[in-house]
Length: 342
Ligand code: CO
Ligand code: ZN
Image 1 (cartoon, helix red, strand yellow):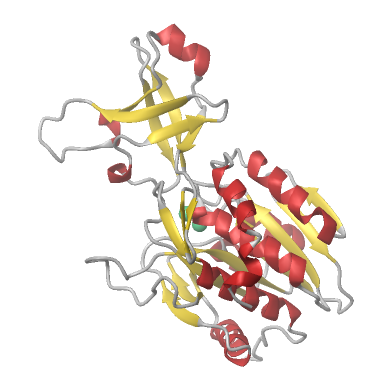
Image 2: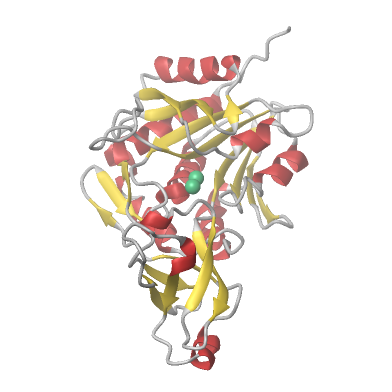
């Protein structure tokens, strides 16, 4: 498994990243995924939170949940002023320093630019001082195009080199891409339930009822993680291109040692490039899955990404190839993680 094996699938990643899908409005993304996975699934359905389930049946009697969130961070309109400027709040972890003069687009195609009031002190940047200018001439002109509660996402075009991809929303369309590619390749004794979840960025929400409904024997989540390989970045051992990340910990989970062992043993046996990941800020929906019902064994494959939650997130295709290969190996493993008898 190398980059060339999956190279012809990348136009689908482009489509996924450019689709509109802030938390709560994931339908455009989920529609693309439903169509792409159709020929490989025994059953497909949605639930009340909008999560998309794609099932491939096996005969072992075990059920495995595989999840990736489909939503992306965004902004939501709170107020329209008399001159037609839009005030907004954030949907998910959007840093104010990432916002100034960014282009944004609403679901209906209306686009705008984020600008700022005159600041008393330079560096006095805060959410309250920012507004979206959609080029409206008045409050009523703006209100005809955008309503209170409408969401916008970053504009962030997709560019690709031999080894790397830059785009908005690689968090976590790259995870969705890894799941869809694994689904095409996998031949497993287990019943695999691929869940493309909603509302992760606002608090790991979609995955929670999905895990409750399925109560799987074990689960694997795929999401991005940060890196420590850019100028003066925080100290972190994860590097772009050094292989799929095997999560040890983030702010929502400590991976059970027997799950970590299971995953790293598979990576070692299959000679898949991998690196251990400790993420000091942010969490993944694995944290919600783990705490469901009487507790669910869950592991996480992480795709190293630079500039997470910006319009220009960057990943390495070699890490993606490693993630797909390791996910397939895990799903094909007859035994799965061995829950210790305490
Ligand atoms: Co995120
Ligand atoms: Zn994510």
